[in-house]
Amino acid sequence: MSSRPMAFDLKLSYSLAGLNSRRVLAVCLHPELLGNTTLPLDVRLRAQRLLEVCNGGSVGSYTDSSGIPHVSQSIAEFIMRRDVGVHPHAKDVFISSDSERGLMVILKLLASGEEDTQTGVLTPRPCPHTLPTLLDDAGVALVPYQLMEDRGWAVDLSELHRALKCDRGGCNPRAIYISNPGTPTGNVQDWKSIEEVIRFAAAERLLLLVDEVYQDSVYGQGKEFISF
Ligand SMILES: Cc1ncc(COP(=O)(O)O)c(C=O)c1O
Image (cartoon, rainbow, N blue to C red; front, side, top):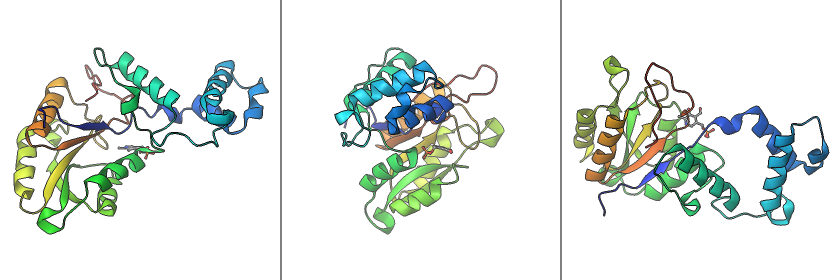
């Protein structure tokens, strides 16, 4: 294995939930709305472009399992604009209907063994409230690492080592889940923290599962979102 860890960015942006995106979706599902001038022009043009790249001009048609290639390409271009110096490939983008489904696909691939051989996932405490159930449903063990409340709920490297050491023997940790910006804490990891986590994951051969759903919700002076 190379020293570069495998990583999945679980969600690029929550902005798809915005009003215009819902309108685009409505037009895609009901193309007659393309002629409805009460809808903004950019909404109709976006929907028209999406319909053009769907087989048969319909969102009801089959697509690649990883999503519509045109959408994967625009996601790759978004990452390139956002992260200077990064050149993602559309073929490395896998689109799912929501982040939980995407996470479940990966967890099921990782899940194996029982008791001391059962796959484990290092999971922050506190963590998104739906995560423990999801891990349980996937058949993987939750390996908790405590976030540091007195440091604004930061991720602490020695705590990661402690959690890993403590649980090796109880299960087989194979991945680490990170929520950045953190839910429910709001902690935003800086470059140093991100680098520590990536080096830790590489050294311990852990798959990085990074949930960046709240990348547009960064609060606090001098705070900046950096994608893993
Ligand atoms: C940590 C986290 N990830 C992802 C999501 C979005 O989930 P989904 O894409 O499954 O709707 C949320 C929404 O509440 C969340 O809190």
